[in-house]
Length: 561
Ligand code: MCA
Ligand code: AMP
Image: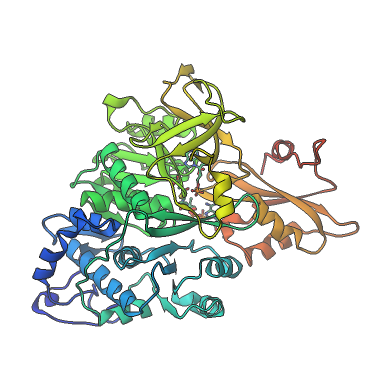
């Protein structure tokens, strides 16, 4: 393994951060020992999430914090200095209070450092899916009005145009090979930085979640939301300093950026960092790991790999699944193959994690098909259409309250009000029940009354491979296409992605609609995971007496891809 922090750095060698033809690891200037003494006292009074992480850095800062799939090694010292340099760069830009830093880059340790540096400098992080294309980025930048945009060099041409059009003054590049203008500019900055003081209620991040109607909404998450959830999960999932996390998730969503990374950072545990789900790397790295997190597709694909077995998992203590429903058959097959019981949990961009199956057997067993019990400090209820609590076994709307629940939608006070009840519960849009029974191959089994089962969604949402797709957004793109009278977008079962996006299109009289051409056009306009895998052309859409499209009828009719 190549040492991320070259010995020359210890003798005070300085280099320009991020240049390609240099030493393996780029952030190094002399140690500031007095600085470490000064900032250690901050966590007591500073609600900045980064201050919490700092307070948990291991005593041995030379220990490995991140090992990459291609053999790089980053110590906790490296993380400290890299984030300090980047925070100093951000601070030198004299951004306004609460400035947003919008980031659409490939996964790399430096991308994680940029997130942490944004927190450290007191600004607000806005991660963007790498699959988003120009129309999508244009909306996010226009809506969030970031002060800084960071993109990969291959996209600089179009992203910078979008950013400048919206008045952004600072556009940097960051690539997954430690190159780009962001690191070059940070290279000359000091590698010490006093973490900016933040209040509990100050914004730490904005995560865009697509809307059932209209455009995406930015969920505003505070330092308290993230810190409280990270601490709760730390306890509830029994994180340890000798854990090794296999991190294969993308880092532009709650699951990979917050749940997985925060867990390791708070525990002072090591991460093995891979850019994406890759079976060869699972087989190579998992035997050295103790924790892994994934969306259900990860577990489906692991089971498809014949060489994946109990020996691959010999050091593992915890597999976590979430972001989409884990099929009971996957849960059972995984246990049978590996002897490990996947822990399924349930979360949202607006609430981070709210419910989880237990890690500690004293609290109960992990029950497949359920998402477990409300996390400590989080209140969850299931209510009927009138807002009255449902009895155990009765299905209703899931609502949540707690320190994890977001502050509201960015610049959408009306939408925020609609999504909360008068007494302050957030309406998740998910439908579920406490208790009741789960049907399994072995017959029905009773579920304890404090376990939640998600049975559906009141919101019109498709979750494909862990990514959310809102039909309305895709329908509006299709409806604008020549020859299209109207469309309905549905999710159908998919063995790999859980659900797949399918479009049902009504053609205008005399028009000819070609499935491949329609898909091709969409691929140029929206993120690939949102593009329908199939398009069916019909004469009319089924409607109920109120004139509403009966998507359940379409889901049945076009269930087979
Ligand atoms: C890729 N494709 C997809 C998806 N991913 N299509 C539908 N749904 C997807 N999720 C497209 C590709 O662009 C390609 O299209 C084709 O499908 C095959 O790609 P493939 O190589 O098989 O895909 P992959 O690169 O292996 O990616 C699949 C994946 C990935 C590993 C499941 O999507 C992934 O990492 N998903 C994780 C999402 C995630 O982190 N969600 C957390 C959200 P073409 O052939 O046309 O080029 S956070 C959240 O939901 C909450 C808060 C929570 O509770 O965690
Ligand atoms: P997001 O908008 O990306 O935050 O996605 C949140 C949604 O993902 C939730 O409202 C649920 O519909 C879904 N979700 C997350 N975890 C689970 C799970 N374990 N089971 C079922 N649905 C889930």
